[in-house]
Image 1 (tube, helix red, strand yellow):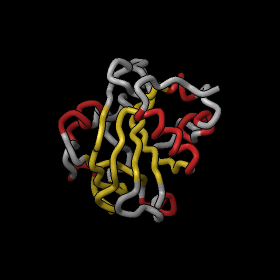
Image 2 (spheres, one colour):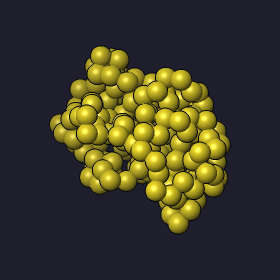
Image 3 (cartoon, rainbow, N blue to C red):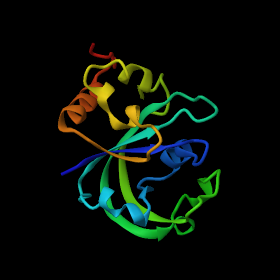
Image 4 (cartoon, rainbow, N blue to C red):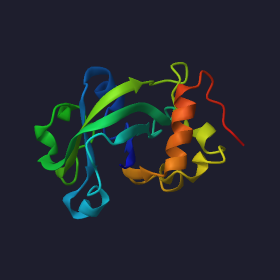
Length: 162
């Protein structure tokens, strides 16, 4: 099984509205040219959803946890539920789209999202690809990182471990 971190940029897609209004959600996991990035996806894979800060500088970090319930298939972005939430039209409308059941969402600091500023100073999570190479959208997570994310997600006070 693989654990995924899927990043959404609020400048391009209204990730908050998607998480508030749809469950399951459909999510882009890459373009057909990058099939090798998603070829290991399996039903039941854990998925963490990351919201980037965007130009509005909203709080960035992990905002939801879910499970892959539909394997990535090639679809036109216009043909998926929530396609109206694109705030910037995609350059290439055809992508690998996966179906994700959201188990828990936390869209603000007060709600308990895992803030990127805290994860950047965590001895384990500072190595996350989404932190080191923020331009991507689909990342795999190592078992130690997954375990730490789960611990933080379930803790009442998500304090970084230094």
